[in-house]
Image 1 (spheres, protein in one colour):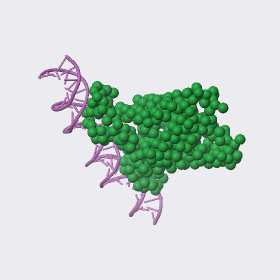
Image 2 (tube, protein in one colour):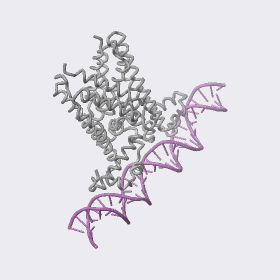
Image 3 (tube, helix red, strand yellow):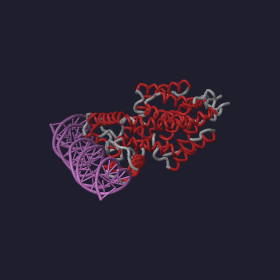
Image 4 (cartoon, each protein chain N blue to C red):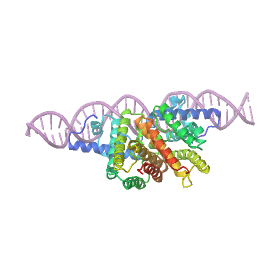
Length: 202
Length: 202
DNA sequence: ATTGGAATGGACTGATTGGTCCAGTTCGAA
DNA sequence: TTCGAACTGGACCAATCAGTCCATTCCAAT
């Protein structure tokens, strides 16, 4: 980061730029999003962009964090209270519902960037890994509370279950995006739910 | 396709170009792979490239198909005989082993292209969907044969199980790529295997 | 009112890009 | 041997790209 904004106005400008970049990247992908496109969409100038970001890669990393914030904020009501089977089911249903609304476009705002950034920008890969960690932590905490309440078997490992659940989300979203069919996520999440249920306390 | 090769020499040239493009795209991603890079790596000329491909997008679609061929060929010994629990387990283990060898780099040669192509090139999305269909079909046929042999319960749905399994692979590979940790795929596939086992005949 | 750091506008540049063009070569079939 | 289609080499181009630069404006604190 070249400069973090020192004033409220600066913060707004930076956010407008990141938001515009996130929008374009979500619609067309990283490759099809130029900095000129970004500043036009943001109503900003080149010097504003380079005032807040070292280079294009840093802007893209900011997009990853921004998208992760968005994703977690959208799921916050569910993720904050994953303490019953109904809550887990409702959370999963809401993920599918969102894909229906989006007409199965865009895939995961975080996951779909892995293929675009992870191999070419090591720092970008780390930001992606951090984003998944933030997401997985919420799931993990939910499952730990389930276990603490005696709803998960003693043999159940909340860490591995959280990883497997996040993988099901990501895989389901890839298939959803490629096939333009939200039902792909539904099938993946049904399996993930049943797998959790198989680890329920007797 | 501008022209499919009419001679053996032409076929070799086309394949050399697609192979070089696939290699570069796998290493650095679509955005960082220019046509000049491709022709240099392939030892070809611009006119050769444009003799066999309409434009850059068509070349990238050819890369998708090429990668799918590769993936299926690599798994052919396993996919062709998914008719026992040990065979399924061995197949999954081989997928993890491959990620260990690759040091968790590159992700899925097919799946990691979804985020890079699906939104910007509708034809590319279709080729990706076709690729997943080819892959899923093999899994599905394996599970159907398992059911025919009475190893899967009558209630088990091989179609949905195949989708869920493919989703686990894709999700596991995304997490593997982002975290540079093959164990992420192992955890996702352990869950997928247990889920299949939960659908075993009594 | 002055001042200085923060923020802004936008022209400019050198390099790279995808794509075009045409002259030349290869090679099997007649 | 000739002929034509398939194939090849690489110069060339206009457009676009990420990134630089500097003059100007804003604004809060003194």
